[in-house]
Image 1 (tube, rainbow, N blue to C red):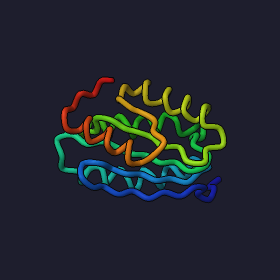
Image 2 (tube, one colour):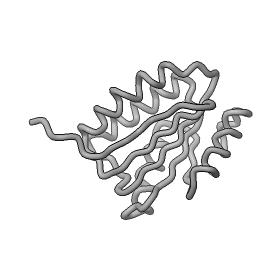
Image 3 (cartoon, rainbow, N blue to C red):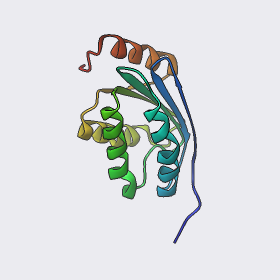
Image 4 (tube, rainbow, N blue to C red):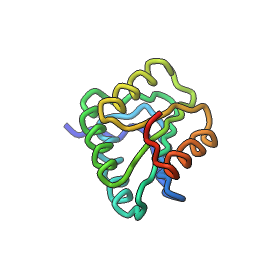
Amino acid sequence: MVFPVHGKFSANYEDCILSIKAIGPVNAEFFSRYEDIVAPLRKEIIAPRWGSFVEITGQAILPFNSNERAKLSIENAMKDALIATCLCLVNSESPNVSKAFWEKLYNEVGIPFQFFDNEQDAVNWLKVMIKDDSSAL
């Protein structure tokens, strides 16, 4: 059975940062649409290393059946020179649960990450990571 896509997102690449802004809650069909748009965009990035800024408004947890796909997506991005990611949760229904979810996922794939309260601090952190490729906190 095919379900309609729940959730919205936009993606933009500028100055070695792929910015993804999503509105949840999302379902598995959302993740398929996300990959259809973002995977080709990542392939167009011509940079020795780049970072990802993710802002999620609302519910910030993926459906269980999308976890492995999310990990594979991040691993593929890392093969394409992604070196770090950061996440801002906006109006999260349960920020501690959401942070624990993403922390587990990012730790499992082994990418440096940080949570931020605002986009400017997040982008500044990413720029430092990209510039010196410290990739360790």
